[in-house]
Image (cartoon, rainbow, N blue to C red; front, side, top):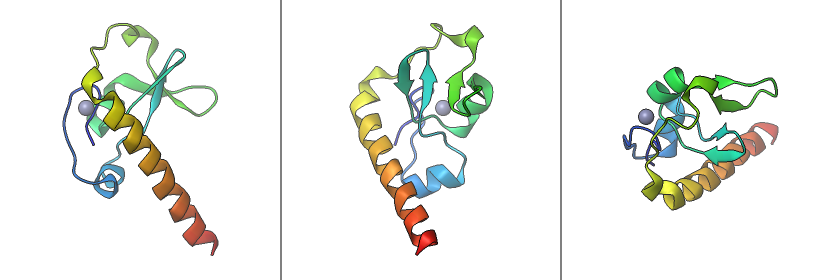
Length: 92
Ligand SMILES: [Zn+2]
């Protein structure tokens, strides 16, 4: 998995979650991610709906690693599944 902002790589979703990565965030209507903990600490904030979004002053200014978009989509999907599995195993 690769941070869409700085391009730092991490091997596993577990490590990413341990280190406080953000699976996705919004820039206006566009969904992006994942983002490493350092980038999200600087660039992201929680909006009124409790979702992560890009701080207004950075909108349109961040250069994304667009090449990673497909991989990102897959990683998001996997992260969603792993979170669901975690919730399931707690409920069971
Ligand atoms: Zn980053």
